[in-house]
Amino acid sequence: QVQLVESGGGLVQAGGSLRLSCSASGLTFRNSGMAWFRQAPGKEREFVASIAWDGGNINYADSVKGRFFISRDNAKNTMSLQMNGLKPEDTGVYFCAARWVAIRQYAYWGQGTQVTVSS
Figure 1 (cartoon, rainbow, N blue to C red):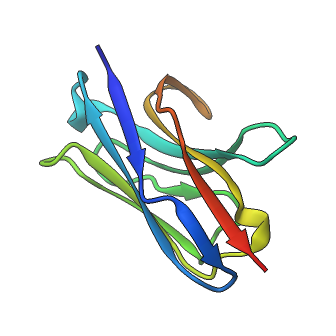
Figure 2: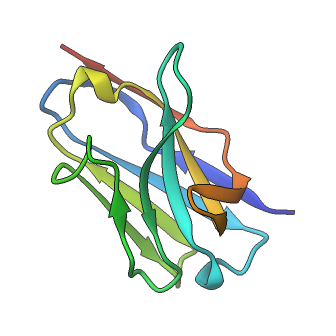
């Protein structure tokens, strides 16, 4: 059974930083493309960042480029998202996704972690 568990969310003031982590189990992590998505209140879930199985082919949404940085540690089955220069519009539930199946589509999802950025 695949499990993805996000952690690291919280409340932060605008301009601050947070580091999210995703711990994966039940899948061959080192072979899985991974990604972060987020969903703001009243909005659809949107892509944030993705990383290929080998740590390459990193992509970011335009809205987070230069502020967010995705990484992974295949030895620890974990993925991280370093978020700097946070803005109120970054508020939302952040989801970890695993095993790329198509563009911006993934087979497995975590339950999410709340990020709230106050102005």
